[in-house]
Length: 243
Length: 243
DNA sequence: GGGGAGAGATGCCGC
DNA sequence: GCGGCATTTCTCCCC
Image 1 (cartoon, rainbow over the protein chains, first blue to last red):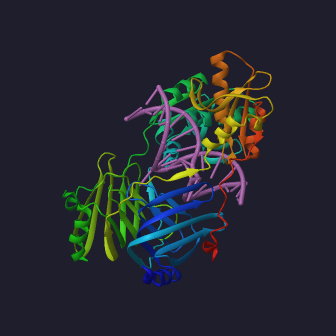
Image 2: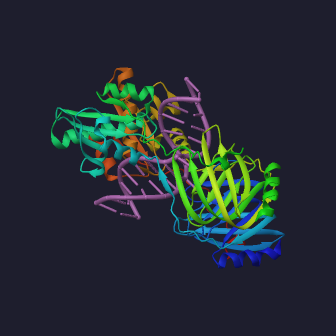
Image 3: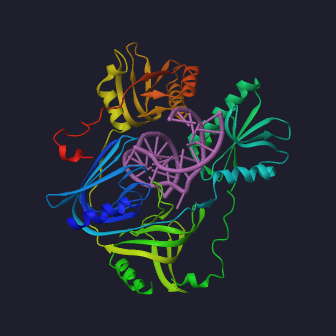
């Protein structure tokens, strides 16, 4: 295992990405503290000095340090010690490696950003562009903006010129969503000195408790499907459907 | 690259963990949609069939599939195609690999769970066990419990036997925290048919807007530090402090 | 399984 | 940097 020390150090110094398969213990100290007993994990160190530790199960890393950490490596007592620190965040991780299953590294070149669709912003855009989805005669004024009343998804006037605030949720609205809407409506009422302000939650669905609270506050729920996804898969891509 | 197909397939069939360093495009379709153009990434497939794609920067994966996916692999046109599907969640990922920088796999054996300390629960426990930290004469009744009024961190009675609800935050309290407290206090007032209910936010700090709203609602802020961490590092561990 | 809430949340944008 | 808010949030707990 000792022979890998210089190889790993060289890879780190060249800003390559480093992957280790290792039996190790992990200790973290920072915003919280954690201890992880001995087991097999994948350790990833990125060119930006992010450190990520994955167990063989689960979606999320069991431990990590954010970008910009320092990583020190040394060998002693037949163990490999990785001592990593993010000094800005005052977060520390110590990994004690007792067996190295594999080590690999390579330079990674990737400046792409992922393009995501199906977000809440797109939903508020859709409502802004298609106000009749809220109701006939609705006239939107602003969307996704930090108004002086706070951050409001969409607001405008209904056909009777009553000021109307819309809070969008991409999935299911809950108690928190109602809290938000309520806070905005109250801010507008106070700021404008008017009492007639409508509040609408626009979402595909809403929890029972949230609906109850919504109605208690005199607000409304409007069932709106989020912008439909792209065609799930091109029918042409027959070859991809082989299993 | 073709020769790796059978090796990777064998590793997957044996439920080993698989790591690829690859130049690839990624397409995801599920709860949202995303497209990622060609670039170098680390691809990790776990024994539980989790799929994770990391770019060379950043803390979080750029794409992933949750545990329980199927992974199919084939080679065509000098490209390696990984077609992964989580059928339960109706989530799909297609990765088109044009260059394979490295491939590694090994069985990982790890049943450990991480032990974390310094959480909000410990903070509410601390207040429950040391009620004088709130104020002299405070008598806690319940903590971190799903009461019939909702999930309340700590509640009890002050020295004047006024019902008091405490909302803990481990870091900074914000508008959302005030919303929560307000919702609890109102529930209790309505359920018990009483008007004299105190609401306190216990946190190390609070944002200016949140404090303003808190006071408008007649609630109080109590500055409380979260339970202190373990000794940062054993002084004995001199060897670890070498850099 | 749904609902509610925290999290070492993370990440983004705006002031 | 802080603040407010969405997130393919994730995770846990409880009903």
